Amino acid sequence: MPNRLFQFAGRLRLVVACLGLIIGFPRLAHAGVEGNLGSPPPVQVAVPSNDRQAGSSPVAVPAPSAKAVSHYRSSLVLLVVEVTWSLALLTGFLFSGASARLRSWAESRGRRWYCSFALYCLVLATGYYVASLPMAWYAGFVHGHAYGLSNQTFSRWFGNSLKAQAIQIVMILALGWIPFRLVRRSPDRWWLYLSLGAIPFICCLCLIQPVVIDPLFNQFQPLPDQALESKILALAARAGIQGSRVYRVDKSVDTSAVNAYVTGFMGTKRIVIWDTAIRALDEDELLFIMGHEMGHYVLGHVVRGIAFSSILVLALLYAVYWLANRAVHRFHARFGFSGLSDVAAAPLGILIIQLLVIGGLPLPMAFSRYQEHEADRFGLELTRNNHAAAMSFVKLQQNNLSIPRPGLLHRLWLGSHPSLAERIEFCNAYRPWATGEAMRYGGRFWQE
Image 1 (cartoon, rainbow, N blue to C red):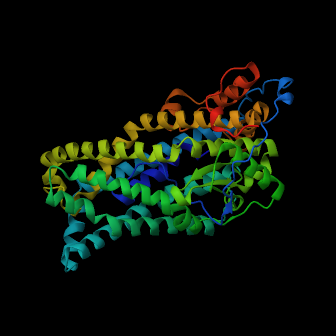
Image 2: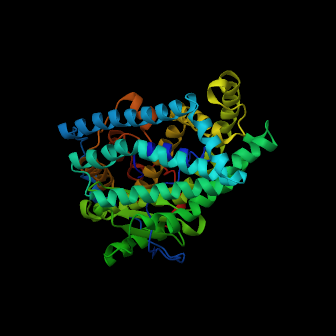
Image 3: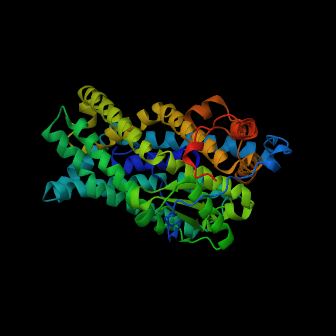
């Protein structure tokens, strides 16, 4: 259950840092010490009994509290302000000619092209960070504390912010020069070569994030509850999962919200559950959440997400190529540069990418909602505990100050998951095993 909109504001900042190489699915800031699910032999595991389901009444969708409604509205306002501020910064820096002047300054001090490129990027990234810091502080620190969702001290928030900025700068210095070299060597095909290069980059980022990046932000450890771990192991065995891992992450130092997610790729794939979720949910609810996350593995959602991201990057970079050339042709006098191979063109590419990502978000959001719905279905078929599944979403709503039925625009642009009301109602209604109907994923489970 990843955070809203794949952490939309953070995703835009990552686009800025990577100069448009990635708009996809890996998240920043979780991982840790493995609690290995092992490599279960093909043992037979009992199918969950649905006896207690027969008398269970449907779980009602709770009305949102006044506090949740206020949080929902204020979060939308903050998101709009953050995005508008980012676009305004880039537009002003570009059309004022400041980008060209910064490039000229960097060239006057850098003896080689890469040195001037690095100077330009360091100043641009630092200036952007400083200019955005007050807004990021209010949205990421003050707002969360105002609604009781944040436990962070200011020093921890600021330290994490500096770490994220440092990671972005390292990525810029390591990879940001590639687009400019490609544009210089192949002005008409750079977008194709860059999109092909983005595929291994996305795979590599998915692979190393849980073991390199995530431990910088939180501590991870095996589940302390051995009885719960044994039940998760049995559930994983029934799902046919071999060699996966489950982690407990200490998110209570940052938030009181509840969450779990799947991350990693190939040898680093893992399921992570927040310690807040372990405290807020009972055992059956946790097992459903684990079943949901196992569904992402078994159904190949990580690989599909990488493939889908790669297609989006191809379309995105072609659109950048088409739009940026026309913008340079029309406004080159104001920009102070005449080609995309000029480092000063970086803000133009970033600005176009941000606009395209914002406009095109409904497509990846719809793809994500489909995968999350199927993971819900998988979790239900695996656990056959409708009541626990529905109650997990009720508690998610209550603990995270969520809205069960957000508006249409929110669902289209920010809805990476089905609405909580849709998920609760699906959990109430979906039980083919009780009526003798075929289950969609039942053939994947080890049976008695």
